[in-house]
Amino acid sequence: MDRLRFGTAGIPICTNGDTLKGIETVRKLKLDSMELEFVRSINISKEKAPLVKQTAQRNDVILTCHCPYFINLNSDEKKKYYASIGYIKNSAIITSLCGGYSVCFHAGYYQKEDPERVYEKIKEGIKTIVKEVKDFDDKIWIRPEISGKKSQFGDLKEVIKLSQEIEQVMPCIDFSHLFARSVGKNNTYEEFSEILKDIEKELGKNALNEMHIHVAGIEYTDKGEKNHLRLEESKFNYKDLLKALKEFKCKGVVTCESPNIESDAILLQKAYNSF
Image (cartoon, rainbow, N blue to C red; front, side):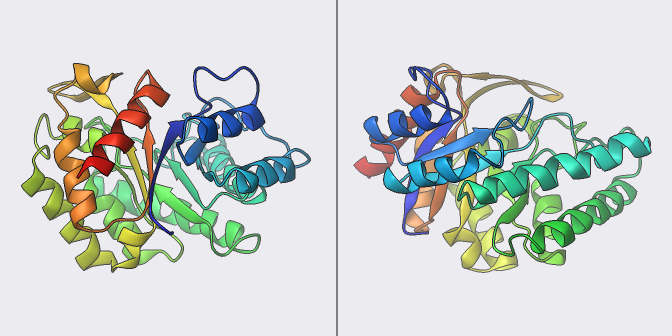
């Protein structure tokens, strides 16, 4: 990646139209990335994908993707388990056809089971996904995301370990989820720096050059994430995060998931450029 790019989780709210218009709007807003939101359905066809790719390339907008929400690689129901594998695999294929480079997803739930056993089951599911995706595209990143609730699989150590053990896997670092999951920790320059040091130490410099980051204002309870907020309504310390990202010369995308996606994406971009 050439630099750290800022963009929206989905087409900007002010967009009058579809994904193609959304990409053009991102460029007009002087942002330079956009996440394809497949959270309720994979809503881009194989036939339309090449046009999405052309539009993104023409506007110099980098694309990522968020897979459907209804994924649980720890499901005891075979139908749900294999459907989850299919959602991620098919999201990756469409994203690849669109020219995107990274696919993130919430991997599953602990369901009050032993976390180590859950880890192994989810690991096997992701290995299956990578094996199937690799035949189609051996460069697109498959990314388990840091989750915001303690009941969800996906703390920092888990997503880093998966990235160490499975080829073509890197973490999606949702710093707001990490803040909520730890009930208010991981919110200072020093803590953000330690997180980035750990990522570089465990996964190498390339992990900081190909980052897929989520940021939003967030509200939490003692169980973790409650809901997303505008950045200025939240206690999340985005300015110190941006300082750390700049200090470590991170590259990749920062995707804004606040309710006001484009306004807060622009806020993040301007704050980052002010340092």
